[in-house]
Length: 278
Image (cartoon, rainbow, N blue to C red; front, side, top):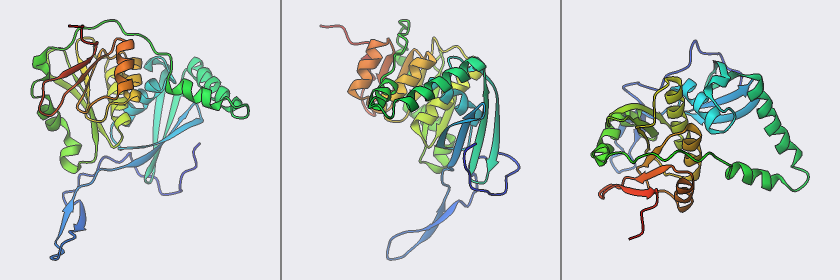
């Protein structure tokens, strides 16, 4: 088990701060006026699989079971959420431990992955192992049609309206799923951009929603790690409100992931699939 500061355990996992008063502040002005603002919550989440400690993440304390499912899948620890049998969340003051029970096959694969990393640290191969994790072999997706342009119209405004935590406190990222009719079906928010997508993927898988005709939206910078998570989740299309990196576009094209950037004041830009030569 992770080493956590001993504090009285709360009766249940805390929800995000919804206090009307929020936190007081003083403005750095000659008048020194004061006010109050709601701030985003943040906790440490320690994750263990079958009693084996794996990771400690800083997350927003909402939709944690969605996060654990999505994180486990996105990190490659499991191949399907059906490998997760149970999740037990236990509060420890400002921290929460997640005890995850997985199948014997998934646990064996997780231990083998850890053994290979540990065994390479003394022979100069740790960098190679790290590169294997950063640039893994991932499935090539079946070719999927691009979403209709009408489904992207006014999307920024609709995303802003769906972000309840961001409207209250700011400082959070969001990942959303837009279904085949162009409606926002799910919205997950977190202080971490990777965490927000993990929560969305976990929710999609747990609710068994069909993602083939829809697309995911991320409000954050679109880097390679988000492409990894989208590919492992089998999402056909990823729409980013921020521009992608060059490597992100390259990987999206190589793996048949539709990748679209939605600029503030320009038409949607389809980076993957690559545009046909004129």
